[in-house]
Image 1 (tube, rainbow, N blue to C red):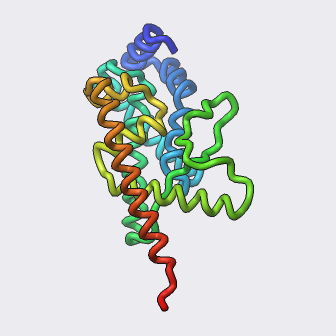
Image 2 (cartoon, rainbow, N blue to C red):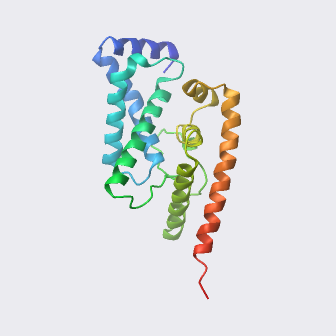
Length: 210
């Protein structure tokens, strides 16, 4: 959607035009749904739909606050990311801390979707053994991102799961694009270090005691 057309749609939404909201929903629901699924592969389709519904409901309530400095879809991604984290935290609290949540690195791309939307750290999974290994890698990455915390987790998720450019992330987070690139580079180095440490701890735990 061109920026001028998007601006008109947003104006119509703010005026209470339901047909404009239908356009927003039809245009952005599927990308937001894929984004949420890629953030946490353990979510069921029902979970994803609930999170997306909460995200779009929040967008309806807060559209008047949308500054227009980034694309509407970028803004929706950010809302969905916050809703997904809230959902995970509530579910983990309900389970009394049982289990960690993983990010899908191999989430399916819908027809016509962008295959580069994924964080390509694993190849195509074809066998049960490869599937298990991919799940283990996804779990390690999710845990590593959680250990990094903000702002690294946010900027990595927006870049690799939201497929956003440095300009879009900069507009969303009120940062210079060069700052985004520099911060992303440092955060990826930190992520690599955390993953390396987790990998060594995993291997050490598997060494049999003599």
